[in-house]
Length: 162
Image (cartoon, rainbow, N blue to C red; front, side, top):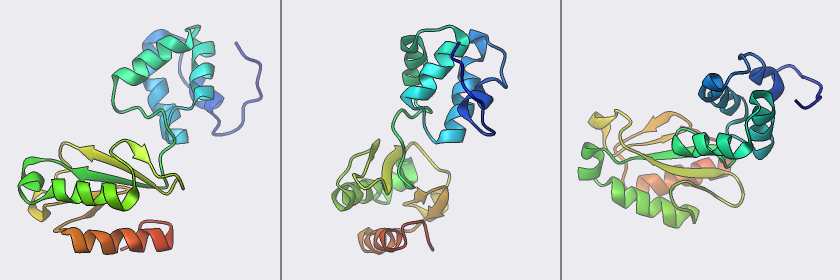
């Protein structure tokens, strides 16, 4: 195991909240991702050291489940709902527009680190379809023009704003 100084709220502290057993791997990954926003290479190595597992095993589990992110997400995380109601009301057009505006595809982060774009099966906002979420906040009844204005507002503020 690595000899490191444990800081309050550090990855090591989060890891040590769990018994050093492989059966706790997913819970550890979830807690570390909650702390850091993603699973860094360093964190994966620390988890491996703690559980006496090679990093390849940790990566195997982290890449099997789509809840885990191995890339640092942007400050503004946009999810485009692709559920049936949103699809029927044009969410694919919203996704296409976002890809052009941001210059990234689903699962990617802009070079400036401001935006990450993702798609999700359904966000549960069918009554206001089509819907995107930005850092968990819902924005519905969107069309290309409203979406462009929203993204420009986010870009200017550097954060999610109404």
